[in-house]
Length: 271
Length: 359
Image (tube, each protein chain N blue to C red):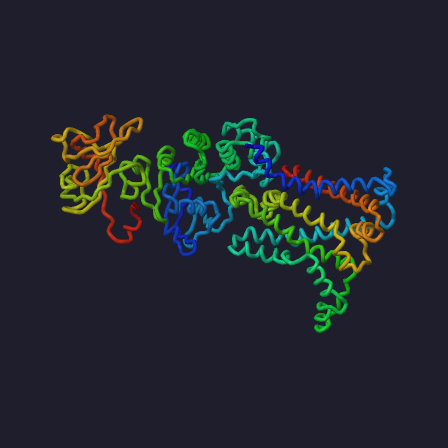
């Protein structure tokens, strides 16, 4: 009986073997070999080369800033929507998620048009005699693109975590003498941490690895680690170095996820 | 007398949610050291009353007095009372000790004081040694005891309990009832208990407040509520009963279903329509010729302590509880002792009818 049920997982196993496990093995193979298929650490170590290290640094920095902005924007919104008891709160969430239904590339392309020197935003600003905005092809535009594209991934888990909190738990805290601020710090925030953690993970990982946003809004002037890897594969046609750098990036992501998961577990104690 | 001191007074309280009137001009006082129970079906306004006392709802009209002071608009954290919630509402991200310490830490009590209090409270609810457990690892009954411990360490003058045993199974519920009575006696504080379970109310309370549709139906001791229900709703809600339309012929004589019964009630006037309540255990089954009314047994169920029978007599299905069994089809006579007939005024207006029994 149980074996028969297990058979149902077979299509997925086939899928993951073909498109996840085998490619991963290939990355590790290319990452640790040179062009003559001999074992080497050189590809991985190439991360410390000036250009690559700088790209990794900027990537981490911009991903952190974008994640932080997402948290600051999403938390109050999710908190208000979850606590309001509004019948429309589900609809409000839907509105915030709506842009996600449009293609990612199109959305980023739209920002490119909006932000251009003679783009829509600057035309309006000029018309109102306000100083024009020159952020296209700068890190600011990249962060803007990241925040815009990944914001829903922060709002959703936070909203879920906050609306799952039993209102009577909040009433219990108030009943025991806590004012609204103490209730938030001691009860509501700790109970929302699992949602915060998954939001941070879901925003920071794609932000760290993106190359499309930096391409389109950075004008190719700012290289993120994602762009470096892309160039190794597509322009330099060097799968070995590209794979080696990918492995380093994967390590960073695993490290970050491990750290946040650890904090999540320790998050049990607040006094 | 100090014992009769009014600690809480609800003065002309009204509350609606949207178009629905939940409490209508409610007056109630609670004495110090009293175990008072608000009893009624769901939607009767008992939980709303408790939430107004706890500070989680504000009444539309009326005033709440605590020890003579107006606390109507005081937030929950400033009130000298604590609540035990229906679904425990423990902080799942804290240990048991941290849960119990919550209120004391908010009030910046010294560490050693808090430690002593945790120990004392856990002992009081028979859960010593549970300090470092997490709430999720406890059974429902244990979680409810922790919720009680968490409330009482703050030494409230009044403990509000909102159907605290509702989620527990029968055996555990009965054990907890005795535990609550013991706790109340040991702590010497006022308990305000909300429940829809009449047996729970009868077992634990000093005073029962029967509520229906936002109105208080009757206030009294358990014995008084059970033996002398003031209206058909109370009689029907508390225990099983036969509620029958009757006519008060004169003082001490009532006509029930065409037969005349001697009663102990007077002062209703002559030939007045009334309702009478006769508890099933007070209906006596005898030989047909010895009874005041004759009928036939139609149903018999064995209930353990007694048999429950239905007897068709003079067009009414009488509910009878007796330790002796009469098989279905037996012709029987019905007798009722005068003091077991409880006479009540019939509801007069349409309005009063509306708050009566819902079949």
